[in-house]
Picture 1 (cartoon, rainbow, N blue to C red):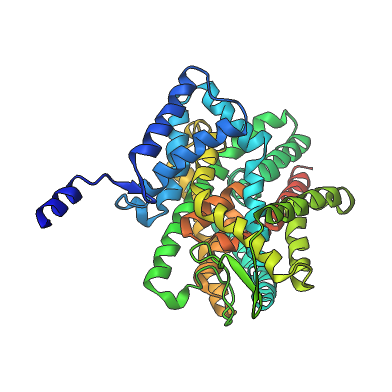
Picture 2 (picture 1 turned 90 degrees about the vertical axis):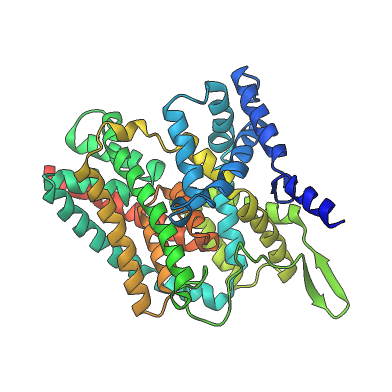
Amino acid sequence: MTVQTKTARSFALPTLDGVPLVVPIVLTAGVLAAGVFDAIPKNMIGGLAVIVGLGMLLGPLGNRLPVISKIGGGALICLMVPSVLVYFGVFNANTLAAVNALMKEANFLYFVICTLVVGSILGMSRKVMVGGLIRIFAPLVLGTIVAVSVGIGVAMAFGFSFHRALFYLVVPIIGGGIGEGVIPLSSAYASALGGESGSYVAELIPAAIIGNIAAVIIAGLLRRLGDRRPQLDGGGQLVKVASPLTTAAGPAPETTALGPNQALGRNHALGVLIICGLFVLATLLERVVHLPAPVLVIIMSVLCKLFGVFPAHVEDSVRGIYAVISRHFIYPTMIGLGLLYLPLKNIMGVISVGYVAACIAVVVSMAATGFWVGRAIGMYPVDASLVTVCHSGLGGTGDVAILSASNRMNLMPFAQISTRIGGVTTVISAAALIRVLEG
């Protein structure tokens, strides 16, 4: 009996969440092979088939690799490996078109972000939410000031002019991403300096990408610091209060008690309706108040939580969707980001030691300032630093990558404030300043 047991164990197949690893490997290989024959549907099904398979395999792999596992692990691997493979032409047009249909045309990325925002807000206590929203602006503002100063100083030390350092290295990093930052910046630069906005996009994107990669690595290091020194780490909670946040690692139970003999299970359809409905209403309201829909989703979710719009069991239904997305779809989302949003070819033409050093300096100074300011005003330093450093990421794309590397997806509402409000402020300020300096 003992000999048979040992023999059986020696031939046991490696598993992934209880399923033999060979199953996702074979299915993913089949999907990629279909791409060779242009057989992947260019819709949501085809896109999900590509990103979910690769995410399930590369994410756990990254968390087990030496060194890599300590600086971002699965998030870094899921972001960088697809980007490198695209750079070398490994994926054909059919595969990329399927992912594009999911991530951009169907806007799966915004669904993920909206789920994380609404689910985490409805899953936290009012005291935690209000305290975090009030205090986050201090490390964000001071972090931005320090990052701009340090970034310009380092760039100029490597021979860059003040103009080049500020408008082409620092500003793209803290501008809020490509769609919300680089694109409007390029239009503003073209208006002030002349020329086509497209030529400015090519000059602005490399700094934004390098800054995002640096932020992901720093997020991984901050997570490791929190593991070693738990007193600095709120585990996804910004403010030091007794009430905990709902975290991706520990979702709420499947039922919510309503009375001694009554309980309601989660209605996931209702959860999806609330998440998507709030985003649609925010899109409609955007035309009136002229604020970005993602920011309005945060405001609407906060108001719903403050005034108790949804009963406890309805909030729990939203948390159910949040739990599924945060547990199982973050690595696949990172695969999609790496395939479509991280063009390494844009970096290769401008990369130099001084360029990279200046970009890293911006991100490091942002994170360090957030850490110390957060600590000084009663926030958990690791979490305050993570939210602050999201200001140097690629918008919502960067927020997902940074919080995934740190396993703090429940910080998404605060990260979105850091990215959206910080980015909009940066773009407006840079557009006005370049007109003054070049006028």
